[in-house]
Image 1 (cartoon, rainbow, N blue to C red):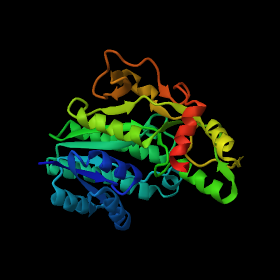
Image 2 (cartoon, rainbow, N blue to C red):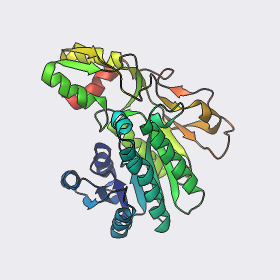
Image 3 (cartoon, helix red, strand yellow):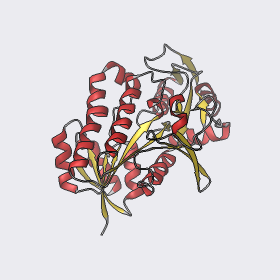
Length: 314
């Protein structure tokens, strides 16, 4: 018999792709407060949709009582930096209170494994409320792991191309309407990941959930300057770009591993892929020797950037 797996934020881009990845091995349930989108996600994946609002602890209890999951992947979140700055209470309700509610119910119901989806914006120096809320989720889950039989762990990565919160769908709409892409930061550098990369990272963490219990699992990622992404877009699809005023909370670079985490982080290799494991409970015997940022990481070349753009344009 298949084990039950609940995905919060199941109607989102990541949630749907996680469902398609895991539905052969697990009985997957999609939890979301947007019931229309969740039914559409259910129809496209063949997985059962259930109403779930993480900001309401009784809603989580109802969902967990209904599907009795052995595993919960916590992907529900307010993801837009600017919206989180303008409406911090909404962000707090979903990303902080929602994560706290989920952890409480998981411990109550003795859920075996909980994986939190985090972001490179959660690392020091934190510049926006969204990053702060995700850092709070990380610390909450890792501390909860020390006081329960539930295995709590997190995965952390950068921008998932064409996902909810990604700038690329916004650019696509701008380009379609006016042929001009508005950008707030051409000199900014960002990590970019495909949705398959993101799903593979979650799958790797799940397979090793006992080993990485109480830790943060990061995948080695390449980055690109926003200007370079724009140049590849315009070269292949035409149009132009225009620089506009920056958003509150943006920073020039993102950090996969922050300065304060160096002593707690070690690298491993699995099937030719490099992963960084952050363990706040102890200093690593073989720590990484530097921060891992979008400035010092390997860069995506023109061919790789075009392949990334083709995912959502063609």
